[in-house]
Length: 151
Figure 1 (cartoon, one colour):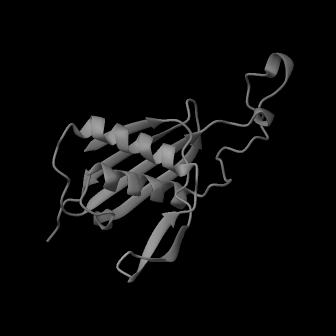
Figure 2 (cartoon, helix red, strand yellow; figure 1 turned 45 degrees about the vertical axis):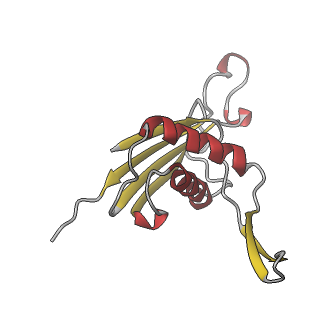
């Protein structure tokens, strides 16, 4: 099992945009870019944390499970005032059911782990368990497990 913790506010991968480009040879090509500006620093943080944990190990082979828990800070409005400023209001939601959605957050993690060489291709991920929770500090906790082959 590989465990990686990345501190900071997770960013979504965003949508992909593709456009045609003319090469010097005169042939047309296609360029694909990520639409989310803020995802690059977050993706770089995930890649760096993965490199540190992997320490030069070979990419994982075979089917894999990916478990990711995203922790985000509670808004100030979830807390009481005055002497109750450190207490969460009873009316505050238990989970952050707000944007960005968990699948886009996870897609950014998958792209970064591919870039870091954790696995050869994110198509190896056959099972994902992803959650968004409130917590401090903001972070992503990542676990990658090999799926045991069954006859």
